[in-house]
Length: 459
Ligand SMILES: [Zn+2]
Ligand SMILES: [Zn+2]
Image (cartoon, rainbow, N blue to C red; front, side):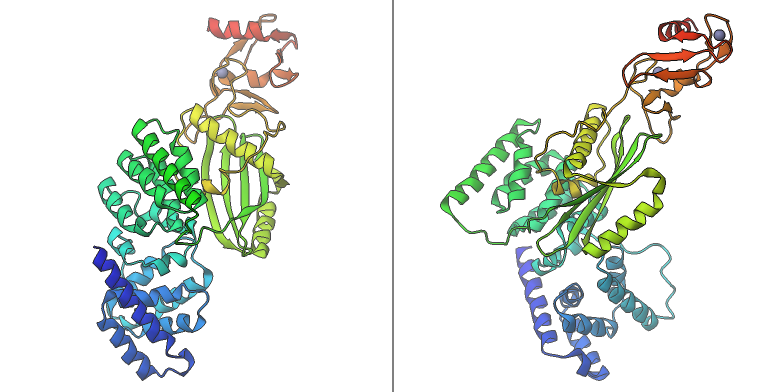
């Protein structure tokens, strides 16, 4: 298998050299065809190298050459590969356009064939092997993690472990996102492999992941993680230089929040900026009442301008939700309170969070006291309020939350004997924890909360 990697690398390298020797604007169609045939004869690795060129931002000639050669290639696999790439999330726009062009031109080539109707081909674990180190350079860590999550998270743990052993041979820091993801998936054999492997990575993120593994419930994983951390520290003491450059250090950029008080939901945007000015951000949907983090997604490769446009569009779309910019500390309080709630109430965190977690997990902060309690109790029965798409929503006025069951139970006024329900009563309350003042809709007499609870119990 090692040998395969080496041969792959050589085949790709030759193609890169071949392309660099020609100018796209002076290449004739005949020459392009001849060159395409030559590359094809070198095998699938060589063809793959052309796709590599598509992703290279800094080589416009290579980019154009790759498009020309790929469209001239008489091979159905080219179309298949193109469509596979097109399915990848967050493709740079330039690459997407190039792939669409190749797809259109290739489809012309193969016209006469029935169009593919039964879905597009999937990436396989084997096809990952064909991605060289150069290839990782073209992708952000989060894109690699997302690709892993979407294409491989469902493969068997044995296959994934085998693949991880191959991929992580060179300890490329961009694969640390995949480590985060696999730890969230939670297969013990894989985590143990990672706990050991991470000791060979020279990146602060590897240390952060290992430090988290020191809290793992399994002793063997804690022990292996501890040894790995020791390995990293020893290398630091010796002053050995990392073989690969560390991940660029992104800093907090901006956070925005929108609130929907009637549903207990917050949507939060948390962004960071890399030294090269690129913005990455995650969008998180939080449920303050019960479920913590419900959903999460993110993007990379945004310019400041694009990010501002996105914010403006969201502000327009959610005008009623008062979207506003919030301090970093407020954002971190929200994220951490929400994650605590997920754990406390046993709601699994979305797997996608593992792709973006590293953007904020290392930030130190003091809780923002203006953020209300996460995880609410019904003000009538004092049981935890449960929320979810299939559950009837609780009854809410301001910050008063009453579970659906309590709010729909028939009540009887102890003074006039009239029948009512909670939402029909006049309700006032002092603060989030103080007593409720209920007034009967028939006689306007106060129904003390104790009496109501008793009459509920009597039912
Ligand atoms: Zn209740
Ligand atoms: Zn009454």
